[in-house]
Image (cartoon, rainbow, N blue to C red):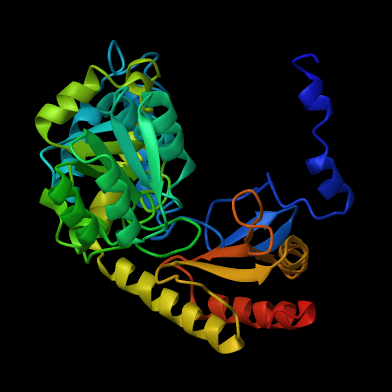
Length: 392
């Protein structure tokens, strides 16, 4: 069997394309906003992670343009060598203050942030303990580290305690999502910290979907739980509420210095483009100046969750702007995506292997900038299609 045989044997995507139900790599030809343009059609965006609606903010765009003019389009090297700019240092200071830590370290992507943090902090013969619903970048960071990964049942503190008992006395890092990106529920960070302290291990919280969402400042789940000082590492991304691309890790100054010299995804990858750094700095300023954005985000979230439930949709354990609609088998997920697409509503179907075969999801997510008219229009179409398929 040759290396490329698996390529020729890969037929799944073609089968779905032939049915006209291929929902991935869709091409958008406009800004990422509450309404986008696809193939010349107006589409209500009900699947973006731009929770505060800042990706198209004039100040964010102007900040990126100004940085492009000053610094050029890139750094032509890694942070370790020629790729550290003063704007990177400024952003790291702002991010550390934002999440309540001494220091932070920025990476070119959120994915690399998790890889770099876990790989540098955990070695062979040490342990990473993860929630079974943790993001793929956390799982890949575990693999890169060479440490042994143990998993506990989703948000089940009894099972976490059981796992910790099996490695009592060993070095370990518990890594959890703040908000789970598909389910839309929240990690019980306070309880996790209590268990970690009992067993003398460290905690890392991935705040990718909780920055700009949780706590009145938008600082995330750890801050909301009052556990900032009890969490060793806080990770965040720029591609959601912070209107750009990239990511960071925050913690003590000593840990960040160690990571600078040991995180392979940082040392061996080009640094964050200056325009991206400037975008995040401006997004942070706007978030602080306009706390009403977070209030509006939650107003929209509660409105959609209430109406989905009243229609008869199963939204699972969601309690955040990520609201999954559990639609049963894979056929329902693809049908619902297709019919909503025809109605001008952009959503994200979630199918195996991301979820069990008989519990597929339509992942919806909402923004502070959605108007009530847009949400109401979308709800009418969700109700129409849900009844047509027989889900509600």
